Image 1 (cartoon, one colour):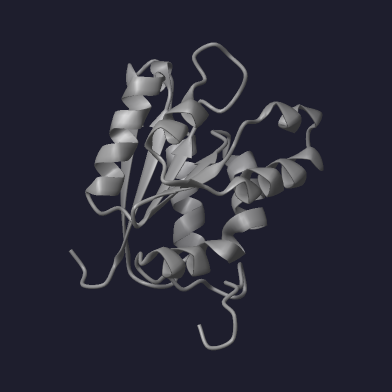
Image 2 (cartoon, one colour):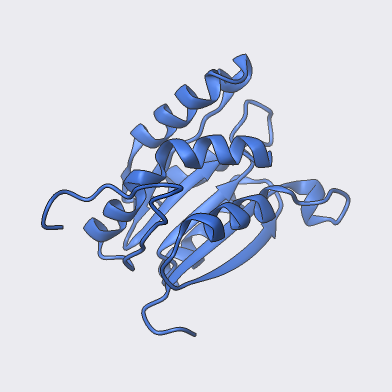
Length: 178
């Protein structure tokens, strides 16, 4: 483990992917985006789990309490009956950060009218920032491009690992002196 490296978990929530019936594209898409933007040391762990409020909540609890600084969750944020990721986040969070979901929907609506069906959000548990994102790689890019400038400072504020970004891709916003 690299000293001072940010610990990032990517959780794909999908019944079919967890059974090996469907190729997970969200997890690799999110990892590729992060590796193209974050310039500071990081360790990324990917997980694939089935849909379900209890399963997702237990995974998020374990990752946050185990020291993950940033947790990206792909999948389970739509209106389908098994899409219970936002409810699982609510079960484990200390604080909700609804602005992340609002901005991701705003950015996505420029591309597809069905973005309004998304229930993405973000929350804090301890020293972990949890962000729910879409599962489609192009939508992941749209959403992370829209919100990630605020992520490094949020991590600073909650006592998580400091991350730096490539300003050619995303300029992390930190107030002067932060």
